[in-house]
Length: 499
View 1: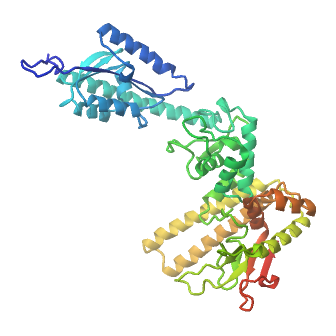
View 2 (view 1 turned 45 degrees about the vertical axis):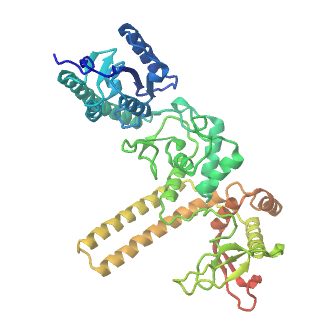
View 3 (view 1 turned 90 degrees about the horizontal axis):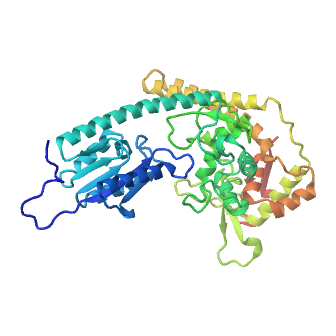
């Protein structure tokens, strides 16, 4: 048997190296958050240290809870322990070696430290071995190979079981915002999810919904109390809205390790829990988020930025302020922003407050005589058909690009087919827009002019008003007038409502 570096003592040494004792604890999954598993490991490891006569302090115990070595998750305390090992000879105490490493690469990284940092491993289950000896390394490599083999089989079994659960429509995983463990509906959170979906379908941006949640709703984010300040982020809002679970549907896509991805996981079918929104609304939300040309609810602090356009060049107007001007009527203006590369841009300015008063009055008058279209019972079918047309047209565009690149299509053939595919996408998005328009006006006091004026002036935020404007207005053009400069004249404005 080879002699361990820990057991060798040179005849002449300036000082004896003191072996440090380190305990490492890890549990792959902590469903309750009570750390019961690692606490059992801690008790067993401390008992082993007592039997071996090893002294351990609290600073010598390293713990990674709810962290799987197989799934490549970071193990912060494991990294801290490696830093300690580099300071001198170490004896590492674990419950079982698979708590320390489960992949061969991790073991080899540990063995690489042996040349200058002697390491001995003590395990409650499985005994001890010395990485400084050939026999110890052989034993460690055999154990880690067996652990990696078992982990692979376990992962396959878990994936198969999870897909089976998904196909049955069973709830999977921990509690999510709106639902408790097992998919039990949490009414107060479900109300917030419903409002988030309504606002987004009405045209509000993710940023404006996030601002509402942080400043007005009084509802902490799902990560409140988990080392965060409880602040909502647009990414959190998007992940909730795009998820299939809020519409009572079961999704499964194991390739996505965290979150639901940009357009959600693949939906397999209905789930066995209560829905907050309808499946058709989930389809529309995903369609709106997946549109590359999406301009829904553009975030702005002013009412008409990018909604009003320049009558000279067609560009969207942006807001600006008169520096040092004391007149309330000229606090700000809308203008066409000059761009050096486009000489036709710029030169148009109009008073902001006057333009907003004109447009607001016209929209309120329009709402006072508007009748909401009845909700078609096959609206979900309209949405599904439109989505299928969009997906098919985008697939055709990709095929066309490949064929053109391979020389199968001529330039003229490619152009004609590309225009046809883009036209199909445009028509399908128009169909989705008609369905979404009803949601944009949902809950408004349609037909009551007094209530509309009060809500417009006192209740609705800028994002809400912009959502209403984009659902009603087809074109809003401000024409140039060299005789009046930025002074407002109603005849400069062309306002056309959607049919």
